[in-house]
Length: 380
Image 1 (tube, helix red, strand yellow):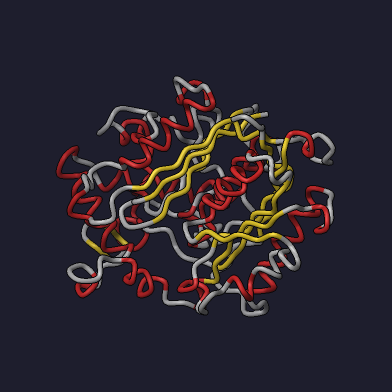
Image 2 (cartoon, helix red, strand yellow):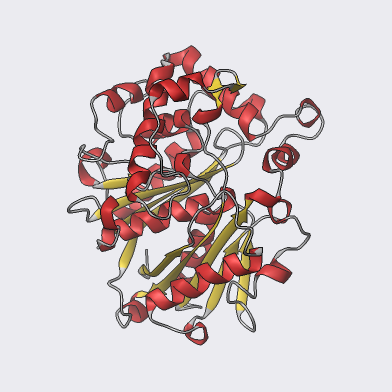
């Protein structure tokens, strides 16, 4: 990077199955105002606002006309991305690196209780052949899992253990939506939603928002919070048509990881990183991400789980926050992963803190079968 960028303000709302006492604007405002307070600055001290949202998920056309203001953009430079939340952090970072801006407020949200997300996701399918069959992000996850299992083999128990791990970690996260432990028996007895994927294999949707304040090195030095530096970032997008992709691997995540590692100077992620927050759309997706991120060879993710490497207390704890499997605010989930990773590096993760965490990985994902992926490497 030619100009260093730091995270200097972090905020999330509590993730809940529904927020009947708050309209969407209030949820957004809560996250944005808390992030500014965490950074110790006022809205007038922020140069730009970057938001990540989708009209379909917000349930209104050109939603940024209404939601940009509670996100802090009144009479401010504002830009929107319709990828998921972590891509807003990428966009904001690039704008700061350009030298045009010195700071940015990054905000993303979803109020899934008010929108039929599964049905809406069908509109992301190829319109002539795939959409009429009702494909959505759940059914295509089934495609991906079947492709992986046919190539490498993966017992259901290994995936179920990911859910148990993440839900157990969520017990230490007061912001998590689901703070109750589950057993492998509960996971394996939940109903099939898209063979072989079961209901509890998928991240449960919820309401919530997340916001970060980013700043250039010059601005970051004067902030009240210690800066968490974005040492590397990478992103990549697979081809749109599912028939042209190898669904047994997360190719775009491999590319994004290589780029982030190269920028951050990481050569052995399993040894050089202290904690990871992975966008676990499903338990199988987390396992496949282990391999795409270079934490183990392809087909060996189950072994990594069995050896306890990704457990709290393991060599590389993954999703100490509980991850999306403990509550996914859909569009904002990747930004939540970045916020949680930043809290770990800052030493402010509370009971979910990984002792001695100095370098963290954050991952965001969107699209059918993990079409697009982003990776951040954060450090002190």
